[in-house]
Image (spheres, rainbow, N blue to C red):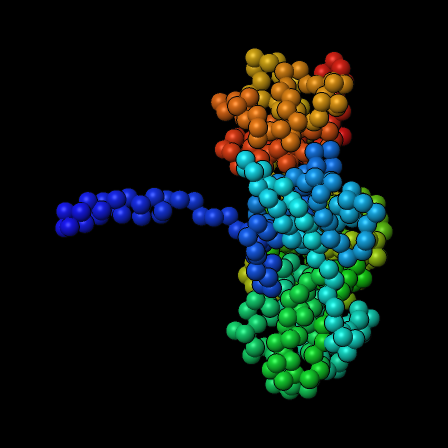
Length: 457
């Protein structure tokens, strides 16, 4: 028996070592979803991303990773708050970034969605809610005169990207550890908000506050998205540094101070703006469709910055914030300052989607001779599309067939995926990356004629 025990010891050690080396299971839910929900087996929770009708596929973003799922139009059930005419209309009606739950089956590594449930709006009693107009009036008065306490229930990283003025961050996931932020007077007006109509964090905060005895607690259900469409937000110097500069997230910094003052010191990349000439600035400003984050700076975070920021909001920009305390606060925090001439024109290039290749680099590779081409071009369009033209030397495999035809895709060189719009190419990117390929994708629309010549929009 002792001999058997000795024999089992090395086996047990080897099994333990293998278990330690095994990759960690991929999360089935986005972190933000786990604050309110648990995820059942064969279910995923995340944010709806790209949708490709031609390949009956869609992407689900779960934090920093993407899941690619198929669906059968005849059998998939799409549950939306408002009835849709058909499955296609239901999918097209799901906003990018909206939270969804997906029930699926899996066969040969392919996940097929059977149910796609779109998160519905929050429902609360009328006496538990407060409107945008009411919140705006309170903020205009300020906490002391308005006699209110405003709490942002979103996690700290979202709060640092911009918040409703006068709000204090009390993240719902950390509510129980930060209850000391609540007022001592349990009859005071306490308002919670978060990420909009479907966000459960502020209603969750309301429930916790009521359990603690607060009798005048309410929720601004429409939250930060509604505020951002009507008025600028605010962020501190520390938040600007942490949320944008440290993460190298592109943004536009507008300096509304007099030119002489600004030239003595300003935030890196600042663009000079004359408060009375915002209309002129907007003629060459990045399009609202790009949704550029904008931070407006004056000397103290006062009316000048607020006026410029409001002009931008009225022009359709929704990611506009005022730097709290202005340039003086930035200086006081000993944060980096530059001198010299400020930029005269605002430029904004959105952060590329992970795995994407620029139009210029793709074109250079695609136009190289086959013997000199450093990568394989993989065309993932359907056969009815490729019959009209293919880039010379490209391998054609429709995106839904990729996993079954991996043996046709060489592993000894990089792979560049493209389709007609970039959506299926991105789906292909995630599928191949999962299988260990060195792969990128073209995120743009491309038109190819029968000679193999192409144009990219």
